[in-house]
Image (cartoon, rainbow, N blue to C red; front, top):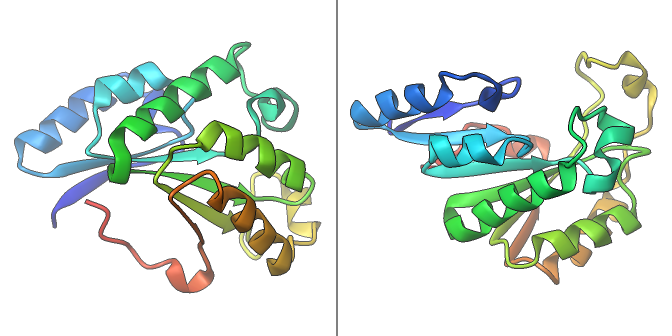
Length: 175
C-alpha cells in the first residue's frame, strides 16, 4: 500500500479531515482526495498529494441541478480548479456525463473553466446501480458518440481527456 484515498460522501465536510491526512502522511503514506470542490479552503488545509475533483456541471447550474447550499458556487469551483491546475499531473477533473444535465453547451462552458488542466476523465453515468434519486435510473444514458464529441471539445482546452468505461473500474495507482 502506497497511499490512502479520502473519499465520501464528501470528505471535506468533516473537520477532522486535515488532521487525518496529516496522520496518514506521518505513517509514510500519500493522500489522495476525492472531492466536489465546493470547499476549496479545505482542499488547501488537507494539501493532498493527488486531487480528484468532480465537476458536475457549470457553476451556474449547481443550485438548479444539485441544490448546492452556497450562493458563491462559481468562486468556490474556480478556486478548486485553480488548485488543480497548480498540481499539474497530480490532479484530475472528473465529469460525470448525466442525461438532462450534460449538453454540448455545458461541456463547452466547462472546457473554458478547465483550460490548462492536465487530465480530465469523462465518466458516463451508470443507471444499473441504486441511486439517491431513483428517477435517474429511468433516464436513458448519453450515447457514446455524444460522449466522444464532449471529449473532442474538452481536448482543445486540456492536455488529456479520456473516457472512463466499465473496464477502467479497477483501483488505479494514482499516488
